[in-house]
Image 1 (cartoon, helix red, strand yellow):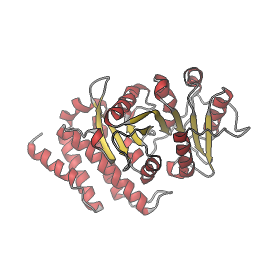
Image 2: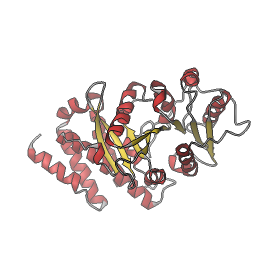
Image 3: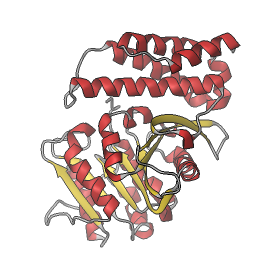
Length: 343
């Protein structure tokens, strides 16, 4: 990497521009510089995922070119989300190119950083949101948020409603990439590295450390929590479920942990019967569980906002809303074959 390349990339990452065209040009130029230097980046980020970050930039260019408005979003919401994703992905690539990593403690609002893996020493991406009201020295709640399959950490945290949720409860939110593994099991160490990095960077209330997951992350949250049960004040599964293979260990090791289970009644990716069975099973085991079903809600997270707002508030306040009688049977799924999710 020449100083000229690094200077050009740094300038483009700093001056992303106000128009979609200017942002597209910045993403495209960053992708070109990244590809040119990809062999040098591989030892830093790990060979398995280095090329994934280049593909992200290409996907961002495609999103900027696509004028289709997904259901559930206003034009302004979608434009802001696409800009946030592209900005975070450019930041990730630029940090790897320059080998200068943003200190997590310096992030305010939405940002991206890389955390050194305790497993293999590589630098692994973590998206971060820090509310405007955060004050160093004043303990704040922390939510570690796990993304869905086919989704990146930048896509998970980029929708404007994530900032609104975090601001409403004053919580810092961190979303580890987890190397893109299907269910986070091979990358569980990265989740706990992100947790440790957040506790080092910010003043975190040790009694308000929450693990949440969406879709694939909603399944993975149960397994990740089992690794270090004492770290989590509560666990939230959004459009996910407890697998039968984990059920006995969850009852044994997380018996005192409250669970918050969310589903949309029209979810055709993870049918609502599986989150309902999860809540029924946990309740039958004598565990604290709150269940939320959004009428007409689909697998898209934005369609679940009413219950998401309610459940995040309940979780932070320690409120339990018992599932209604006859919510469903207790037959847990053994596995769900989920398609790749796109925002």
